[in-house]
Amino acid sequence: MLRLDINLLFVVIDLLILVFILKKFLIGPVHAIIEQRQKEVEQGFAEADTAKQQAEALKQKYTASLDGVEAEREALSAKARQEAQAEYEHIVEDAQNKAGKLVSSAKEEAKAQKERILREANSQITDLVVEATGKVMGVESKAANTALYDQFLRKAGEKSEAGSH
Image 1 (tube, rainbow, N blue to C red):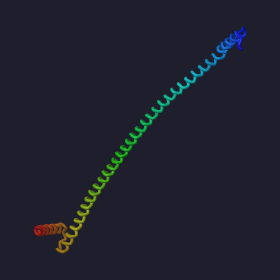
Image 2 (cartoon, rainbow, N blue to C red):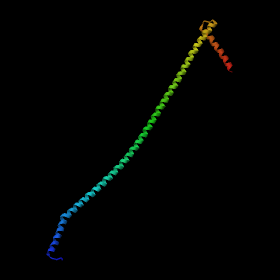
Image 3 (tube, helix red, strand yellow):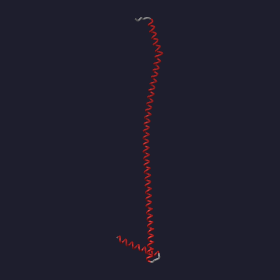
Image 4 (cartoon, helix red, strand yellow):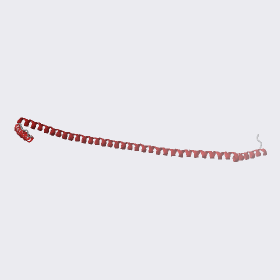
């Protein structure tokens, strides 16, 4: 059975002293270290959350920047297309104007050349007719031959006018 004597009292006192010493020198520092570690872990989680929020903000900023760059690229591309189209139309219009001027100039030159050729041919025909008339009539003077030719033309003109009415 259990006896109560002074030894038991010393054992209990020894146990209480041992618990107090263990608590003071062993369990207290261990709890302090655990609390310190817990604070470090919580601080690490807080820093991780802050870094995650900053990363999300940077991601949103980057996405917005990309959207802006894409929109700007599209706008520049559209502007370049419009400028190229306008330049193309200007070049085509300029070429058409130049071609029109060349054609017009060529037509005028051809008309002038035709009139010159007709005048030369008419002059040569007149000279031939005057010469032939002079030889037929026996007149040697060029002035007399020209007068006979003019008379012939007037009569021929009168007949053709009378025939056309």
